[in-house]
Amino acid sequence: MSKKTRAKTWFLVHSWLALPIWFFLLIVCVTGTLAVVSQEIVWLANPDIRASQPNDDAQPLSYGQVLAAIHKERPELAVEWLATPDESHFALTAQVSEPGGGTYRLYINPYSGAIQGVSPTFDFSAFTRALHGWWLVPFTNGYSWGWYLVSLLGLPMLVSLITGLVVYKRFWKGFFTPRLRFNQGARIFWGDFHRLSGIWSIWFIAVISITGTWFLIEALLSDLHISISTEGPPAFVSRQEIALTADGLAPPQLGLDQITSIAAAQIPGLDISFISMPEDAFSHYSVGGRGWYPLMYQTAEINPYTGAVAGANLLQDRSALEFVTESMRPLHTGDFGGIWIKLIWFFFGLVLSMMVLSGLLIWSKRTVQATANLAKRTQRVRPDAAATLTPASEVQP
Amino acid sequence: MNKAITAPRRQPALHRLWQKYRFHLNILLVLIPLGFMPAYLQNAAMFRGTLGLGERDIGEFTVGPWSARVAEWHIGDPEAEGQAGNMKEFTVALCERCLPQVKAAYLRIGKPRSLRTAGALLSGSPYRLMAEVVVPRNTTAASELWLTVEGWDGSVHQTAIPLATASPSLVSWLERQPGARP
Image 1 (cartoon, rainbow over the protein chains, first blue to last red):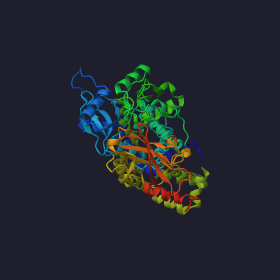
Image 2 (cartoon, rainbow over the protein chains, first blue to last red; image 1 turned 90 degrees about the vertical axis):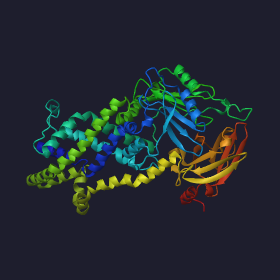
Image 3 (cartoon, chains in turn orange, cyan; image 1 turned 90 degrees about the horizontal axis):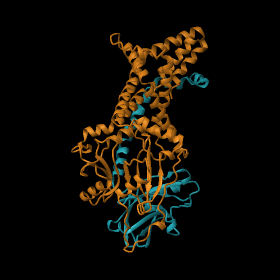
Image 4 (cartoon, rainbow over the protein chains, first blue to last red; image 1 turned 30 degrees about the horizontal axis):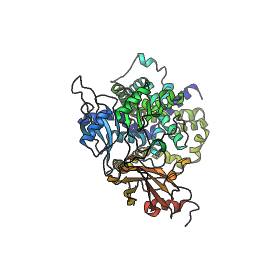
């Protein structure tokens, strides 16, 4: 194969890569883009989840004060966990359940403890994530096959990036001489757009396709029951540690503020942004939050009767491999550094969606013709080589 | 690569079909979430608890001085969880007045020999406790689901629910297993 033909073949591979499933890929990109800012969309739509500081001196309540405020207003509710959002303009979230089994979240004002609202029946954030992440296919036995379907797209996306850079001769020049020709027809415009947005999105396409491929590996590992976790089995309060009571009622447990101050005193570097209540008589309080490395969470388990720290999963306990694998999800979703990082992810998500669309537009105007031409030419040169051109359309998954 | 090259030549009909219908893959792929939408919304409602304790209510059972409502979380086959074996989820709501008196509750398929082997510990919200119960290899349609409840006063009470009542879908799965006894 001549150098020119090889270049053309690369080009055809790039052109045909995601084509038979271009619309599927486009919808996955668009839903992913929406999922990045889904919480912000809910924030705009629903005033209940906003939290504004009443005045500059107002201090947020402690978890113990928040729990007391909830019980004062709704004594029948069982609170399962409390979480402080990453961004201070969001209300505190409390997962609660009521007699009869209803389970939902409450939006709590972090300064007054007032219940501002109840999570709506249709959870927009969860829906966009489920649509983007597993195409709504239920998890019945292990990972959903929808998860595999979506995460498999990481591979053609990665190959698109590589072949795109191979066929775009001296692409780095595009950084210095950006070109977007508006007045020479749609084919030229979309071609310029595809190349220009492509080179500026190299980092983003690499991040999304690599982390997307990790989701595929993660599912495979889980379904093959292979664990790479260094976290030990969950600790339980032993039977001997819990005395039976004379009155036949549950023994008192430590309050939330005692738990958080024990955690803060005994585990330096643990920044607490959520606390979960013990789920039964033998389990612990769980507290956690981000550490110095913003992409990962740290957690600690604290005995509700004695206050002893029963276990912790801190940054220093993680293996080097876990630093890589646990960073994958936040890198994919962009939810590790507040609103600005989310907005960058959202912007490049839009650009990536437009890459799929512009790629299709270029293809529809050019590739059909190019394929026919190349096939004809090679057939003239070497009749049996014509067959090597057909597989270009077979490369896509 | 060679295989892919020669394949279309050997099966021209299949190749033609691919050429003609490859873009229809998009339609099929986009129809998938639409098809699963009702199941997704129902599942979300299940977790919210608006459809009851579980997908199928088993009934209310007396356990010593207390009572408990028991439900099957999902109707269907148990989940195969590798070395842990096959698992089936059940939910339990203890009566409200017994909540302060009850230390723990457990579920097991087959009669527990002691409190130490009472089975899966029910945990979660006190209004909807949940447990994943192992389906032991020797389980038959005649087996029973045992609910053990332990009080803070040290008392232990039990009740047995025939598997045919607790989960007809599990019984039907058992009957489909190789070597199942009639």
